[in-house]
Length: 89
Image (cartoon, rainbow, N blue to C red; front, side, top):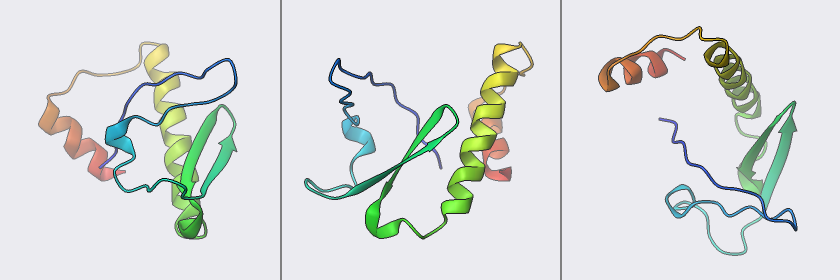
């Protein structure tokens, strides 16, 4: 299941990955940064070739959902119904 968190970029371009998001990452681990239009995707370097097409498709769907939300084209769902919809992706 996807997780969402908010962080911000420093004046030096540094971004802190929130603690709850870096549970599976170790200090010093190499991370690939992929720019896809207006999105950045972080992926462990050792996992780079695994599922990259799925990652990009997820990023595209997320971007499209954000655009629909910004235009007011969204619906309100309970938490359980939301999870059910996410699993369909």
